Structure formats: structure tokens, C-alpha cells
Image (cartoon, rainbow, N blue to C red; front, side, top):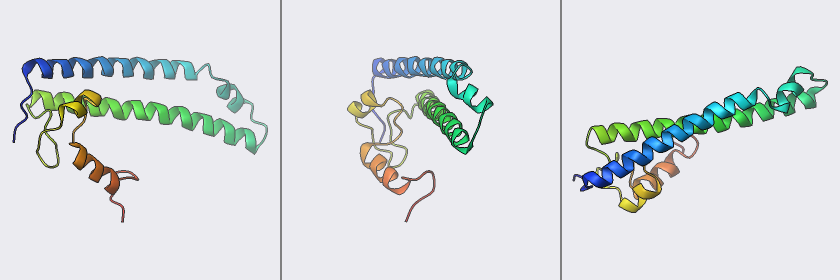
Length: 132
């Protein structure tokens, strides 16, 4: 079943996706530039004990996790823009049913309907590998 989104709705979602894409790129750039000025860079340069090493590593890992989340969201946005280009935007990638317009408004990059997304989250709660 194909999704009956109007051209106007699709253009609105495309604009939202592009705006978020650009905002994420700016955030990543800002975070990377700021990371050179962060105090943990100085801390890592003058490590005195294993506690300092652990703290410096933790702070770097937190910063990298934030950037990684942004990069993953950019990938999701890029995939949504590809679905727009191939006229499959708004269609669940698992069951092929339409994704509710409310869900798309809340999460324009959604690739699954809420039922399939919940099943996916339960199955892949710890990454891209199924759990028991």
C-alpha cells in the first residue's frame, strides 16, 4: 500500500529534514572545535595517576558518544531523503504500511511504523544484533 502524502506535506518534511541535517553538521563542527579547548585535553596532557587517566578517557568518550549520536541521526536523515527521492517516504520499511502522519511530524526520519519500531527496539535493544 502506498502512502498518500501530498506534495506539500512531502516538501514540508524535506525542508525539516534538510534543516535538521544542517543543524547537526553545525553542532558536530562546533563540538569538534570546542573539544580542543576543553579542560580534559589539558588534563590528559598532564596525567598524574590512573584516576586522571580514567577521568580524561571518560570525558573524551562522552564527547565522542555525543558526536556519534549526531552522525547516526545524519545517516537517518540521509536515508529519509533517499526515500523521498524514491517515492517510498512514509512507508514502513518492515510491513510496507503507511507511517502515521503524527509519527512523521514527531520524527521525520522515521523508517518504520510505531508497531514495527517497537518490535525492532525489543529485538535490537543492544545494537544491530538480535537478542534472545
